[in-house]
Length: 305
Ligand SMILES: [Zn+2]
Image 1: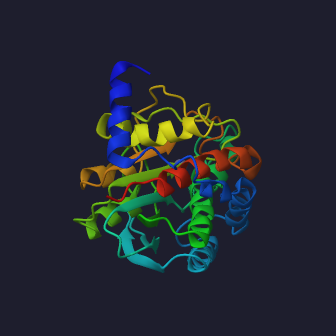
Image 2: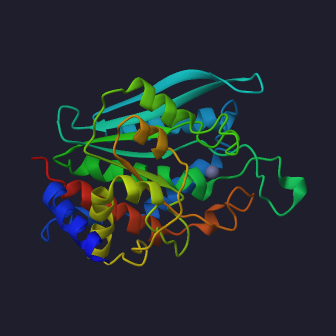
């Protein structure tokens, strides 16, 4: 860590607290095995692609799961006309804990899965949907398990969970029909001002590493320091290396543009990304647990003053 990072780190502690206090062990309730089961649950629905049966089934599952623990749960639905002339029926799935608390934290991920496997090594498979175990499934799995943990022991901060639809539907070259849920969320929640936002994407890979995503570090070093320092304090430093990562266009970008302080925890460079090989066997309960316990410690330790 350089001197700038240390200064930012100290500042982050002053602003946000330094993660869970040493006596607070509530983050240990996060169970990586249970989170892994949530990946398998999602994949079993089939493609979570808008318009397909697996999408509807997964939406119902997410609403039901959150209803078991959160104070309020709802779907924000809208229609999106695609460049090819289709109409997508989309839904962001939201859950809230401590709705009256002023100091709020946003945790988010995308819940849709990609309709095409354009990077598959087999050209014959490039037009079929991916399973999205890691790409989509892992972030949702961590947030479902966190919701279970927060349901058992409420954090003092308010926590909002948003699962974005339509992140991975379209074309990232042209930016048509991608990041749909986060764009919609930013538009309809103007003025929403959580103190901290954390996006999870591809957070379940075996032996994963999450270097500091470029846009996140450039925009919100204090928030990054809080998360990466908390991870290191819990012994998860190898998952959260203090290295410069890629600059990624992901759901945090529409949020940042609308004034929401959101950073992205993401693993890039996976060989099975957007292929038919993005399957549960590529994911690991240990990684999910490292990410989930880090976020739980951040949330439980968050200063609401
Ligand atoms: Zn993707």
